[in-house]
Image: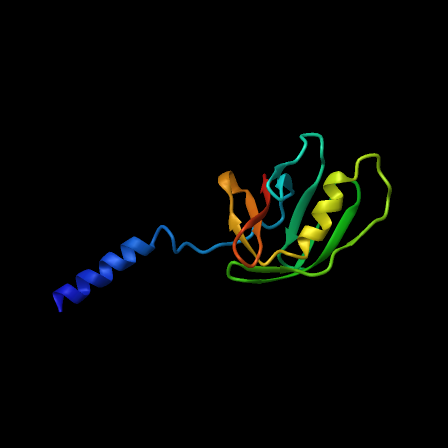
Length: 131
């Protein structure tokens, strides 16, 4: 019986650091820093924001504003189709990759310093964001 109690305690202590609950950083503008493995230019104003109460995401893809609905279940995150404004800007390179990437999101990880990583169904990081 003591061995069983000790095993349970050891398992709980082992799991404690990795079993923390994940939560999206709601209500904050998260700046896009990496997209599909490439660093995003410093001058890009691309960001995303999640509204917990409305279950909506909003942001800027580098030129145009966008928004949509999301569903969240633990670390599983599904972003609904995003609608965006349709301005034409001199450099659309980030935006042309960013908006289609949103449809591939299947989950998330908390990043360094309160940032956010959006992942695909296989857990591969699609985009990194910082506060």
